[in-house]
Structures are given as C-alpha cells and as structure tokens.
Length: 354
Ligand SMILES: [Zn+2]
Image 1: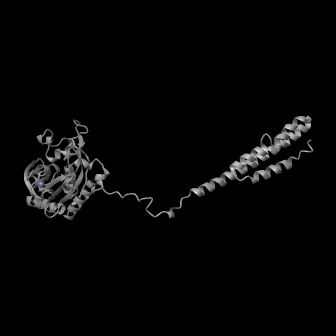
Image 2: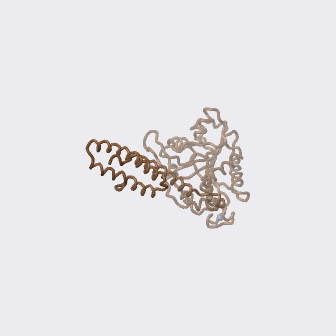
Image 3: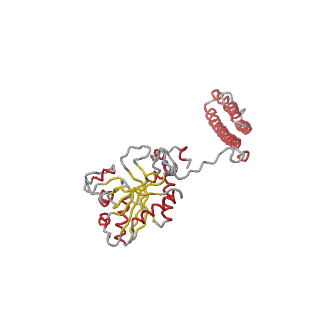
C-alpha cells in the first residue's frame, strides 16, 4: 500500500486547491477537503493501522510532515485573503469629500470671544491709557496691612464694617484675606515708587475683588473693580472732577455726564461718590434711577495724608486723588443688564449677545 500512496502528489494536489481559494468562505470549504476527516491525508492515516510497525513508523513520519506542510499553506493563503478582503473593505469605506458642497455638511465651529466683563475691562483700560494712565496689577490675597491698615483703616476701626471680608487666617499676627477692593494695589505702587523713585504716579488698577455679599441683581461676592490713582505735584480736586467727567463721556458717550456728591471713605479726604447720567432715561428720570436721572457708579476723593504717611510720601511735596468703581457694574449699566448674576451664569445664549 505504501507504494501506492504518493505523498508528494497528495501535497501538490492540496497546494493547487489552496492557491485557488479566493475568499474566507472558499478557504473554509477547501480546508475541510484537503485536511478534514474525509480528506485523502486523513484516509492515509487511517490506513496506517494495517501496516507492519517499521512501515507504519516511516509512513507515519512522512504523513505528519505532509500534513504540517498543508496546514502551513492553508494558513499563509488565509492570511493573504484576509488582507485582500480588509483592503477592499477599507477602499469601499473611504468617503469622497469632494462630492459634498463645502460647508454644507460640516459647519465650521463657532468662534468664541472674550467674556463681557473682560471686554469691559479692556475698554475701560483703553479709555484711561488714552488719558495717559498706566495699567498696574496686584495680588488677590493681601495682608490686613495692605487691604486696611495702610489705607487708614486700623484694626477695630468702625469703617471696617463697610467691607464684609473673607479672612483666610483671622487672628494671626499677619492675618491675610481676599482683597475687598483694588485699593491695596495703590499701596504697593506708592511703596514701590518711594523705594525706586517712581513718583509721580498716574495708574489704573483693574482686578478681581471679594466680599461676603449674597448674590443679587446688583451684587456679586466676586466682582471686578478698576481703581485710579494720581500722585503728582499740585494735584487738586478739580483735576479729580475733570478726570471723572472725561472718562464718563469717553466710555458712555457724549450725552452721559458725571457729578460728585459728598461721601465718606477712610482713605480719601475729602471724599465723594460719583454718579453718571442714567443710561436708561438719559436723565429724564425712571424707575432704575429712582426718578433722579443719576446712577451711582463709584467712589473717589483726594488721597488722605494719613495714607501718604503710611507709605512714606512727603505730603508737603505731593498730593493726589483716587477713584474706583465696579467693572461688572459698568457693563451692567452700559448694556442695561437687569440682573448682574447673568454675568457669572455662563449661559451661552446671554454671552453670545456681546
Ligand atoms: Zn433713569
């Protein structure tokens, strides 16, 4: 029987079947034919049982080799077919974007822009830079000295009640807090000017401030202020009033004016609140301005000599004025935003309008 079995021919026959297979399905069928239970090689194996031991051993070894060869051929062909099929599939899945009208399918992402508060801050800075001011910044965490002490508000001074303060470590010798106003930046500027010969000073100081306020239509616990400071020779209250008026018309428009009313602040003397023409009724009187035609915007005054003393500026040579107001409040007035909380809610439908 061994003479009748041509193992090489058996392998050649299997090889021609394997190479003819063109798909995964054909590979599956062909594998059953050339190496399955009913394949010639399986039949040859079964026939080994009728041979004598020596013959069986020799033929068994060759059959095993032939079977290994056939399985390797099948695996190689299977890999080729898998690769061909995958390549065809990917070619079919490719999308020709030139078939589409540009922009009709994929809309370009909407462009963002600065938040209204940032825009307002930039616009205010532009007005003051145009008037000859520099822009300065300072830290949001301050010591008690910079936020209160140097500004003529010693510990236990009743004026501290004007600011509901977030203290970070109240009671320690160097107690720190979240600044309640941008005025501490004035102290930094003046101390620096004394040390480094930086007088005179013409600066505005925008920044974030914190107070323990419950948010409502006109107050936020985190808000933005811009502060102005001028220290020079021969500065008078008229310079202050003129600066406020020039700023008001430059920012709000030529038909909006300013006026000053007496007020009290510990760090200025005399002090004033400044009001601007109501932007809603333009001075006619309406509900927003309580029929007065004016809306309060900020505070100002001549720098108190006690503040100059605290930083070591000679009050015989230098005088100055300071003013401050809310950036959020400015945005609210200029754009007639009923509720200030809209500024921090991040509702894109609101923010997109500006
Ligand atoms: Zn009004």
